[in-house]
Image (tube, rainbow, N blue to C red; front, side):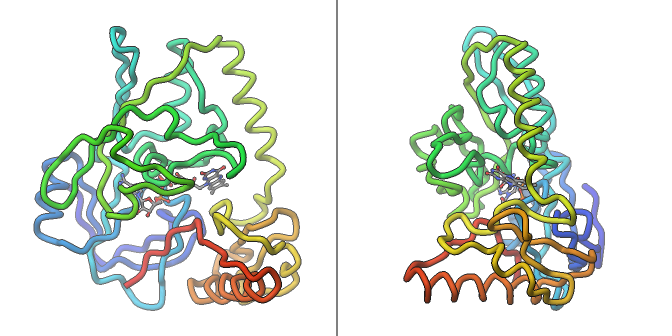
Length: 282
Ligand SMILES: Cc1cc2nc3c(=O)[nH]c(=O)nc-3n(C[C@H](O)[C@H](O)[C@H](O)COP(=O)(O)OP(=O)(O)OC[C@H]3O[C@@H](n4cnc5c(N)ncnc54)[C@H](O)[C@@H]3O)c2cc1C
C-alpha cells in the first residue's frame, strides 16, 4: 500500500481543486483496504474523481482512500456469459473489452473521461433521467466492503435509483462488479462509441468540470454564466455545468454558485434542486 502525507488532491478530482489530504492511502488489494477501514472508520473514497467536489478550506483530517489500484482486471466467463470487473478499471477499457468479446450495451458511457467501474456502479451512471439508460440494467452483483465484512450484493439488493444506490447511501466500498450484457455486433459497438464521443464534444470542455452538477434542476444555469466567482463560473454553453475557468477556483467559490442556483430554482420553480456531484468535506 502506498501512503502519503499532506497529499495534494488536484490530479484526483476533475474540477482540479487544490485540496489536501493529511493522510492519503492507495491500497493495492482487498486485504489492505479492509485493514485500513478497520483502523479508520471515517474515510473519504475517491475513484476516478469525475463526480466529486472537494473541500479545500482546510486539509482533510480523515484518511482519503484512492481506489485506482485496488482491483484491476476484467474476466469473461463463457458459461454464464458474465464479465467480472475490478473496481479500479476505467469504464472505457471495460466497454472495449466487452465489445471485443462480441457483447455490449452501455456504450453511452464511453465519453466518461476517467470514471472507474466502482464509481460507475455506486453512482448508477447513465444517460439522462428520461432515457432510463443506466448501468444498473447490466449489473448482476456487486462486491462491497460494508465496514465490517466483504459481501456480494445481488442487483435487487442494491436498490438502484437515478444516480443513487444503497451502496452510495451507506457509503459501502465497491471492490468488484459482475455484469451481464447482450450480444452485440462489433461494428455496431464501434459506431455507437464513435457517436457518443461526437455527442460529448458538444458539452463545454473549455475548462475542468464534472459533467452535470445537479441530478435534478428546473432552472437554466447558463443564465448565470456571466457571474464569475474567482475562477468558478457556470458554462454559457452547457446547462447544469460548472467550470474551473482559471484552474484556481476553490470549493467555496463553487459552493456559492451551487447555492445561488438552488435558491433561484426554489424561488422561481418552487422545487428543490438535487446535487449530482458528491461533496467531500468534514
Ligand atoms: C465530462 C463529464 C461528463 C460526464 N457525463 C456523465 C454522464 O453522462 N452520466 C453520468 O452518470 N455521469 C457523468 N459524469 C459523472 C461521472 O463520470 C460519473 O458519476 C461516474 O460514475 C463517477 O465515477 P468515478 O470513478 O469518477 O467516481 P468519483 O468521482 O471518484 O466518486 C463519485 C462517488 O462515488 C464514490 N466512489 C468512487 N469509487 C468508489 C468505490 N470503488 N466504492 C465506493 N464508492 C466509490 C465516491 O466516494 C463518490 O461519492 C460525467 C463527468 C464528466 C467529467
